[in-house]
Image (cartoon, rainbow, N blue to C red; front, side, top):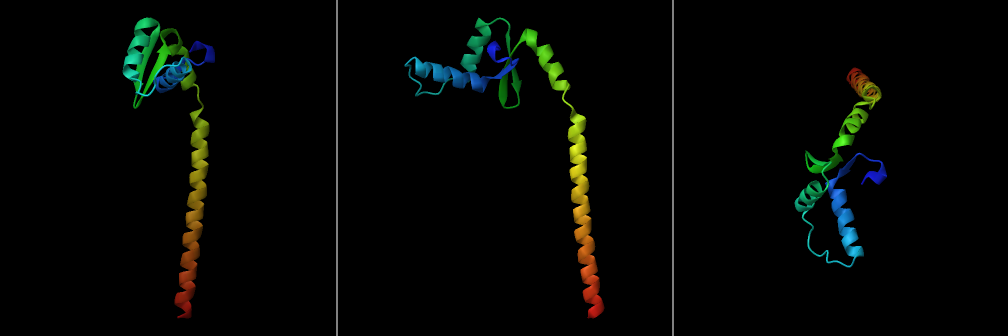
Length: 114
């Protein structure tokens, strides 16, 4: 797991890797692999490994890497996302206003002609 350079791994990805390895070795994979038991065995065999539940996904991480991972996650520039959303909202507002004004002018023109 550490060879990829990632500090965290989804348990579902580990299950898929395990299943493909069992198939490569000629094992039976017709039955569903119990992810909870696999997680418990991994955590028991690798003392530095921790499992964290994240809504619907279980994340595996090493104790020594969790601090770096959290710091990396907090470094993401959320300001640029907010600015992009603000610009998109301004464009949509302008478009709505233009369409409303266009419709009101059209209605006023019809009312005058009638």
